[in-house]
Length: 145
Image (cartoon, rainbow, N blue to C red; front, top):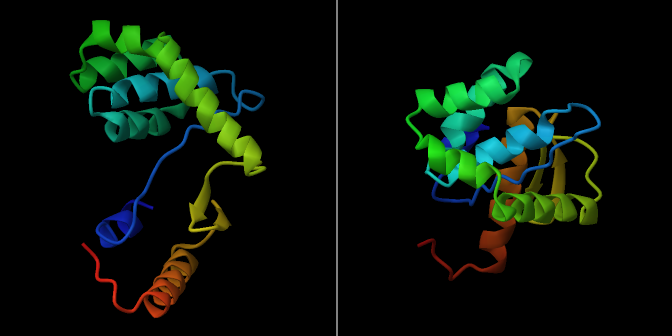
């Protein structure tokens, strides 16, 4: 996805939503809260990538290690990941996943099309180009900002 997003940076809005699957991994929600807290300091993606690179070590030691390594304010990080705001943010994301009847991660939503995470980069590109073409055909006088 990183290359796809880079390639289409000005043409799309990429939004990450948390969908911790606690039934699969006991650390899913604590990891999501830690990533959200890192995001409050503008480091969501770096922290997220660190979590995925070290999935086998998910837990309190890793959360603090990553926060320290990327230079987060640890006091703020700890406060944020234990705040009512993080709980509310994740609950909103889970409610959206429930409304969309999602069952797995990752899942992508492009306009009104739900796309499973197993999609190939080539098919993702084809779908994106098709949707872009349909939008341009429907709104020919619109120019991108």
